[in-house]
Image 1 (cartoon, rainbow, N blue to C red):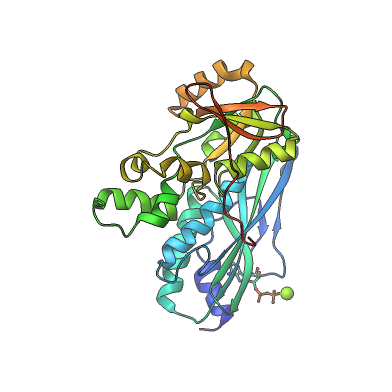
Image 2: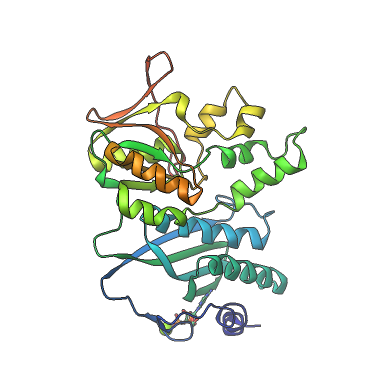
Length: 318
Ligand code: ADP
Ligand code: MG
């Protein structure tokens, strides 16, 4: 099968139909209709073999993760993901690998109603780049730069399971069900698009936690020209971290990346209304600290003692 056969068979035929796709795969560029009163948001993420996944990971897991980490960026902006392009580089044409890859890709995109509208297919070391296009009502996209002094800092879920998976998957003593939870946390993160209406209503700033809570909260602080104080005992640490590495659990929860929960800030005036809505939706978010004027990150413990918080997280060129 040549490049054009691959594109046709594995990507074009299975792509979701959306009415707002005027034309997708097959032309030199795709054409979509952005609704009146909506703005277009664009985000790209690359996954490279040996950096973001290993050769041992299945084609399905790789495709799934690529979709989820990209859609997570839309969730962080309170944008609705609509369309995507895929640039795929593979060392060889392996029919079964492509079949699993494209099936998983389309299933993952399908969960969010996202249509694959174009891309590029090349030979080389395994890597994939997805660009996701989303929409938000005019002026409603949430940025990193909107945090205000006095805001409550929220985290949308338990932290640290993905980081634990990286270091712990091959350890003895892990029960099969726990192994599955960790593997899922790492390879099948769930983008928090369910929080989009709430963020649009209440959030001043938001980011998805891809590099670790402290690193990503620090991005919000720097972009907003503020600082933050974390309530150390309020960080929602995943129970498996408490069980298996109580000594490093906290560090993994705040410094480990790949959880793809959201960190966002809201005025304390809205806490009650937001909690009521979260409750009605059956969701739990955790207040973990406060935005302060003083730059940098600090932590306060149960005794009220202030600690310096080292900003750690993954950086490609460090
Ligand atoms: P061009 O040479 O004009 O760049 P290509 O031959 O690369 O076009 O691609 C032909 C069509 O197939 C284009 O519409 C392109 O967007 C689409 N396409 C190529 N690779 C992929 C892919 N991996 N997934 C989805 N669409 C793809
Ligand atoms: Mg062309």
